[in-house]
Length: 628
Image (cartoon, rainbow, N blue to C red; front, top):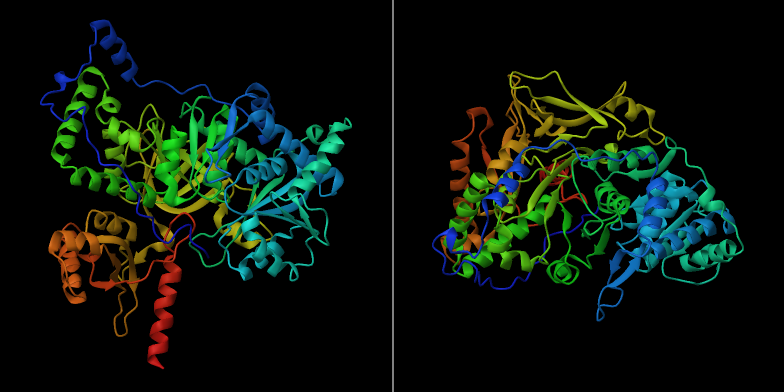
């Protein structure tokens, strides 16, 4: 399966002048005055509050209609259609019209009501329009990874039994290749094309124009479609970390429950702007990065691509960014490297301690003022960063909080549409994967002496099941409870802590369980290591699996710390010495016994999870070839 990105580009950040703190010795030198009354009011806000007023939607169409009426004149989507021009703004009113026109065209002109329609392409305005039209009654959406090779795209089209494919212009060549092998597809619809019907190909704008003609004649049938909250609405084929992708069936109720589950924990406002950098076919982005802000009247700016992140953030000034850990950690490293080069590291550390103390003792938070240079490089308004899809080093979350950005952790899977837990913004606990949302329940199955066991989830966000696969569904559903495959524990306040993945567990001969994620978490602090994967290696003549780590070295950091020109043997020794330090923190049965230097990139899912099974399979194949 394809990757979201092979590696994060080298972001260009400005040199930080840190003029606000350049000559400071004490916090009092900042020009900030607080009266006793103001401090008393700030202290009140520190008291843990209850939940925010939540929502109670049953379908996406409910909040689509509400938001497009209530916020009609407000900006909804910002996209740079012309790289030389500024971002263009699309209002909720325009979005509503386009969704209704497309929905009417699909259902009335092209007779596709209730059919499965696959969407494939990069994040763009007409992707949002297509997805919303399907969720509001035009058919069943099949959002698909744009990076799939030809054979896998063909496979998904056939397995989903799609009657139509909506694709972006960049995917036209690939779609034309697979079209002849997919006779069951009635129409292939190209975004941003008004071409008429040519065999099975037609422009999506043509479909919308046909719908507009019908609605202009007074046909309101699309908006009148009643949505069954519990019927199949979205079919998502997981890239996952298992070898065989599964078709996850989600309902409107599942998606609406995500909005209902998050609103009591996170207070977002119509003035908030979400920054879309992740692929829309993934439920994390399409649900929390699209449906959630739409329900609240927020706007969404579309990042042109990873190398444009900094420039696009500066231009659109987002307040919320959803990201995967690798992206957040890369920003963290790049910003801190820039601070080091500016010679301000010591000063920044000192001011972090001072501002933390001031916030803790009197409730006064001036972090955004003190670290305004860093904030300016991220657009100036960023107040929330949400991390999900994989574990993240807690120190990165703490650093974001230290400079005045709220760090929110989300937890879930495609099978939970995806949110099962999220960190409340009024009680953020860095290190936790979040607090179980109110519409769900969680339990730990067969907890050990530490309270750790497999995490089970039940509630409104849990999927309908796997498409045409009752056997696989039965493997993960036990009554109302979904087996996540993740290992962790719940604290007294229902916060989730993930300690491993049950499918990745390495079991020793004497029954000890070793979770690779635990060891990888310790290795994350080793600056000489760029990426790593811990696994149990089968070695001839050994009864036990040998705890092994594959490492992609950070050659730039190695050169900086240990000197230029090290050969591979020297690099190996440098990294092994760091691993020995990590081993001292582990029980003997968990210690790393073998190091392998990896020179190519890890194969990953679109949310940057390493495909362990694929990496291990490649090793076995190489060893088998060598043995011939």
